[in-house]
Length: 307
Image (cartoon, rainbow, N blue to C red; front, side):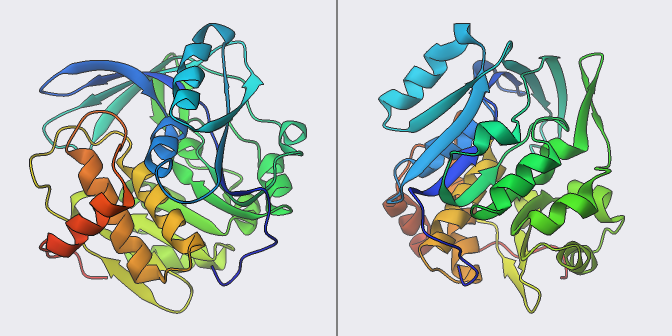
């Protein structure tokens, strides 16, 4: 990363809630821990970087944290009265889902994050009030900030997850170095459906690296100078569960970027990781070698958009 700040204890630190997920697909109903914290942590744990997760959940659900620690993942737990509970319902089209939330966790406050040191902080809010803007500002003074935007565009109304715009977006995005959004999130944020136009708007608001994921149609990365078109890769077996694919993508992308990879290489590695993840339910469990093998043998799908 050319705009890297000072080197700290961890290469990458993820901040996000653990959720109790019910995943409903046409093939099965599965109960498992979820959220960016789970999918990102599992995806990056076999990569050669120093990593820590900062999360918050109810005391009764600490067994989930112990499972992560048993895998060698360093986890810092903040107190919360409740653990987030999500229901993700998919149709045959895995690019779309319906969501419900039965309980929420306490937000991450700036004072709780003061002592955490990392080169890159990856923020994975699940709901609009998970991580206040002041917390983003605090972390931006300590390292690079990477943000998956999805949570800021969701609020809970009577357990139903409703799409909203982020009223603080222009204030907050000036503190964000790397932003990941999908196609629908991009449209909500900027009002534009055109990928290039939207990416330029987000860059103008302060983001240094704009990552737009397009599901089965690949992804696009913009750094203020060039657009990088990242292909999708065909699953070797079949599409099973898309939950956590965006988190897996960002784990691969940030891993490659912090290791010095350029945008195209980092994006392709990230896309291949997401493809491997989608072939099974639950988090990515593979290695860097698995990703490289897919890249070496895979046929790139044609992008169905013009960017």
